[in-house]
Amino acid sequence: MPKISLKLRASEFQRLGRYIVADPRVCGGKPTFEGSRVMVWQVLDQVAEGMPWEQISWSWRGKVTLEAIAEAVRLAASEFRSPRHVPHRRERLRTRSLALA
Image 1 (cartoon, one colour):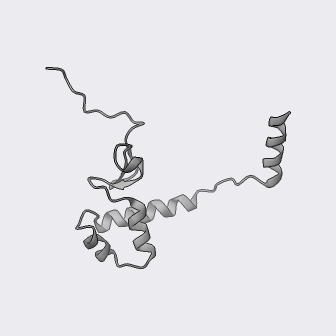
Image 2 (cartoon, rainbow, N blue to C red):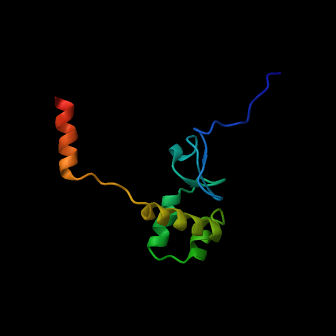
Image 3 (cartoon, rainbow, N blue to C red):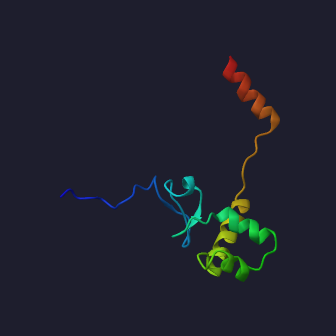
């Protein structure tokens, strides 16, 4: 009988936190809560609407714990803490004109 490898390559599966994973075979690789098909953005939308976290957990039948919601909020907040360079208009034009030359 052939041996089946259960190991996934790092490029296929990413653990984004204790409760949040990204797997290209689940929901197109969008971040989900581990062991479910509940996408993180869905829960963050509920948080943004002001829904109590207990109700969010209940609405997903307990598949999303309060700790998992807290982790999703922390990960979303961390995206805004890291500075991102937005190129100035002149930089964009300069690189475009250099590419044409």
